[in-house]
Image 1 (tube, helix red, strand yellow):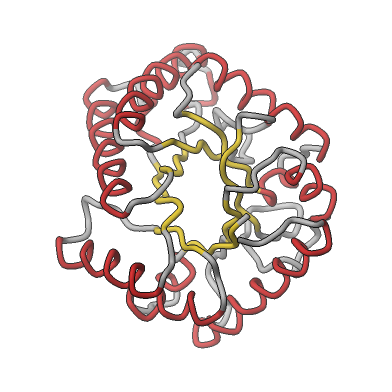
Image 2 (cartoon, rainbow, N blue to C red):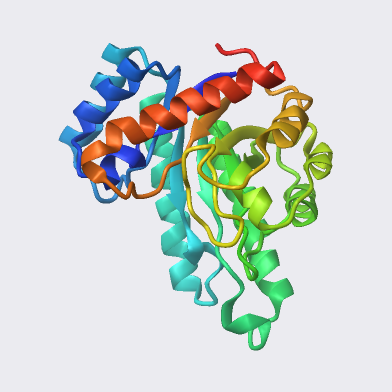
Length: 275
């Protein structure tokens, strides 16, 4: 399994794209995930990302996209976000990435006005069509489990049910370890994702609120989760470190290095081979 980094760690610290990609390679990562909106960056930035990743020998595994509007109750908003997701998939194709990491939204108005089942059906319908578009490009979509109370995909049973209803080979799950901890998910529950998961995020948290910290700075018991992930057979996949805003942006390199060393050690402890 490759050990990667989501480049948002560098972006949030105000570092340039090229610098961040080169630093990712220098630290020792096997791959990189890109956090960039194709509707916000220009052609020069797109080419720069491709060029620097190729020169560094860092394959792009995933491009992250937050598309909460896919389940908005306004059809015009849904259409915009569906087209935006297509643009992201095109961007994935340009970068020769493997998947689009997609974050769906939450139930609106505490499930009191719009029937929750309606929002669920809307999400299923859009992921079926986006799955077709992804498959035509040779890509997959990895859905992220969010730990928030009103998120559509906020636990393993909901993720499994959603994937089963979408029923598309190009639509699979991302496993975010700190989100599992925050949602109260037991490690053994991951067995239900056998054959359904394709990508992993790793970070730590305080067990109470969302916070992407280097492993070891929080309370997440990583080894039980990692042993279950190892049993899912994701050897050809990637585990990407996700870091939120560093408390000391001028020490972002040390922040990322700390996360790299800790994660590499955890992978070796549970017998997850690198590569």
